[in-house]
Image (cartoon, rainbow, N blue to C red; front, side):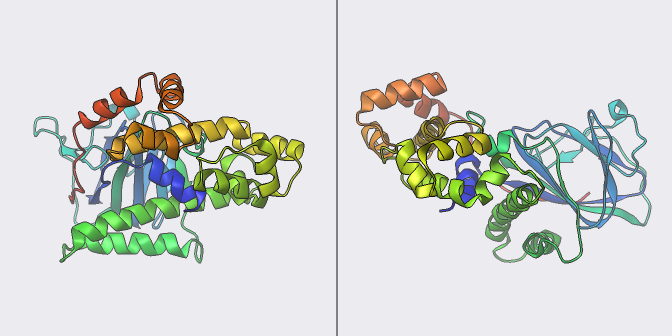
Length: 325
């Protein structure tokens, strides 16, 4: 797989949550915080996203918003509402649960729909956030522009249609489409940021031919005992030039990132498979189970076996939810 696909596969856990929500008349609701990434798509009408801190953001039809860290925020018909007075959402797809009737705040309604929203969330592994996600802003706003991001627009249309009316296969289709939506959102963000003058950070790294080649080599085969010289050769650069360029864009030296990726890959294997520790150690480039266990404990604060057991004991997330309000 390519590096962006690897990053998404590494950080995603469980099934995504989503709901289609129609808002009428004056309305407002708070969402989050959520241990993952939330998203909102305006299918029809308009509304405002109000951060806990900062200026409100106008959202129009077709706009997409990603909150990579599940930051608390509010949605409303007007930007002028005091944040503290906005009630929690009666049904919050970012949490996958309905609040009790005593906590629900009735909202005035009219015959007209002011906003038709697609809202949801992705559960993410909170142990070690990938640097790409860590450097993203709390709110990623992708405004709708005629002719731009056709793949993202297509995924949104398909999701809206399946949530509009349940049909045979809808549950499987929704899960697949939500995964596709996340890929297209992340792709749009990285491409937009990389296209800016003087682009830096992970978006620039993923679109830099030389650095992307080195990253692909690390991700494709973490077990290889890579050296900076060998990775530089893959990038078509001298050792020194490669090390400077990689560190500048990625934010850490090549071998430091390689170690991080190896252990993050091992953590995912511990969570998702029953592979023996020795096999995992070999798969991620450690010559012995002992060396792997020591490195893993330094990074995660517990031995691999204890980490696996603690993740097996965690309650499993709920599946895709649906609601209309």
